[in-house]
Image (tube, rainbow, N blue to C red; front, side):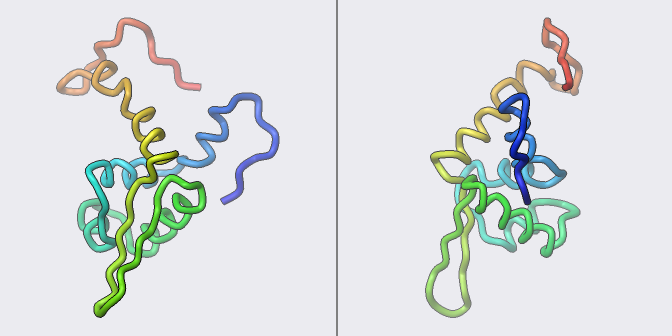
Length: 116
């Protein structure tokens, strides 16, 4: 995935990195610790293994996720959020969620939510 060279706002770069249906869901699923590929595949309803691997590859490329391979048979691989970028991104994405949404999805924020 290519990140644009010219942008008017730093959030455009963030959008380029996490855009799509799956990246934020994948990051959220790893919030509590490392996960194996099959574990992620079972927890994320509707994602194919091919799509999961592609999205993980991009998240690794951008420094949000790291891949750890363990020796032995059968091969064991774990994916986890990086502390430097991944954890900060996840915190930024979930920072206002409880404030913006009520229990049943109704808005409780006093200021309007602006979608750019």
